[in-house]
Image (cartoon, rainbow, N blue to C red; front, side):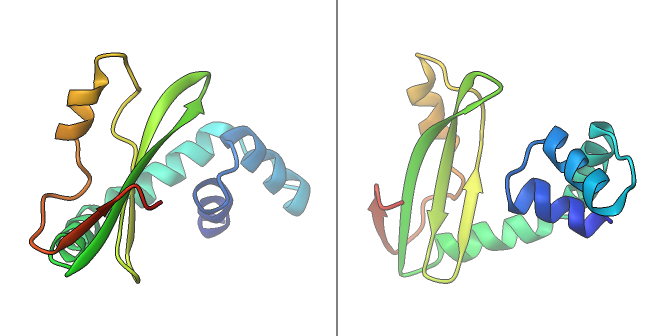
Length: 123
């Protein structure tokens, strides 16, 4: 059940409400939005080592691409940063966008400065 919740909520970007509705319809099992949030948080708890390794590998790559875009979350603008190489992708949502947020975005890089070639604006 956890794998299906993660697939729908994280992998397919369904809302918590829609994920819970889909599970109820598919399996005739009522699931509340809080269960979706709790299972997702538990799954995310063990990812820090993975994320550190991913950041390091992208930073050490000979060529990496970086971009950012905005999207609305619950009616507010948020930034999504992407850092990637051919086989590796890392998405980062650091904080809600604000007019003074430009300098903050520059400090909130998903990947530290690396030693290889960098391409910006290639999402």
